[in-house]
Length: 120
Image (cartoon, rainbow, N blue to C red; front, side, top):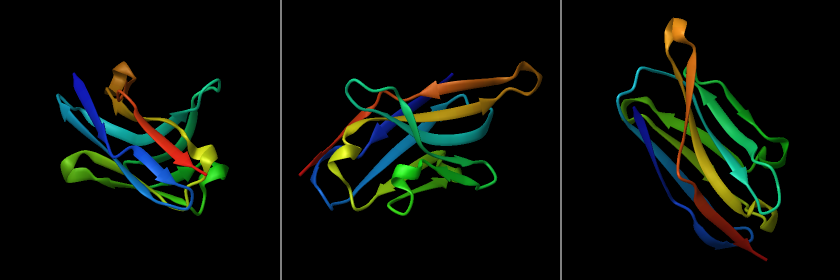
């Protein structure tokens, strides 16, 4: 069973920066992808950024050019560097890891969530 521990959220003024971290531990098979989603009050959870095992990245249009996702494979850790933050980035950010189980398919794991609040 995999466990995810997130850190790095907080309160920041508009235009500021934050860096989120998510470390995976426990029994890990093969990590296909690691990513970040967010959920603002009254809204659905949405994909923010994802990075595959091969290093391919994908971003939501709303964060392109401002956020950067990266991964330390040796530490099974994914990072989200968030720059030029806007009030609309305020949300709970969730780490997500997709684990490959071969013929048994994939399993998705979620972190507990970390609050990011951007004041105007």
